Image (tube, rainbow, N blue to C red; front, side, top):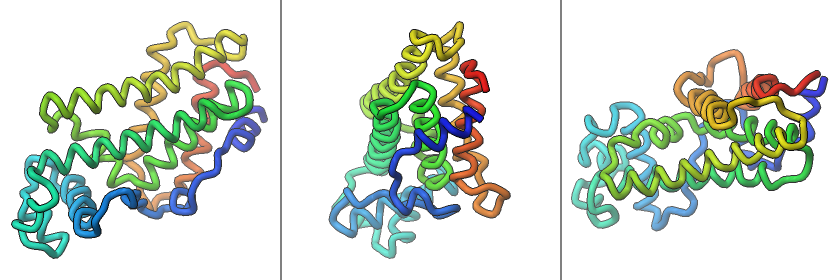
Length: 221
């Protein structure tokens, strides 16, 4: 089957944490010192559970085992925490898609790679992904504009692969912008419903969605 072949040939090298079925990723190694990282992880958990507006700085500090005063040493406001979470998350998402887009192989293989990798990230890091993807409107104008710019780059990576596939005659896509939006929406929504106790692993969902997307763009078996 061409769909399965494209998924297998297009897979990029993912980290062990991203490949582990059901494992919740904590991709915050770039956040230092340790106290700042603990606060950021606590904020992710609180925002995902209660929502940004219902979460207080006291909630975040308490989850991190710190005092509210300690939080302000590392983050001036609650919004700064959300902004950093969102920026790091979107940069990671962009890196995943850009790696796939610039990889070797046909447009079908690279699109399958992009989708399967993007879906695995949203399933494996579902708590983080929910905050990254669904709290955009909680940011102020400047921070929101920065994140929107990153989202446009995300869109451009997927759209570029589709355009190449159409130009090569591999894809049949009458509406490239609309199809790009549909593909990204499909992948992102995984963070909302994925359940670690469900019937599929992040790898399996990624492979399923890659097959579905190849059908969407008109790749024939």
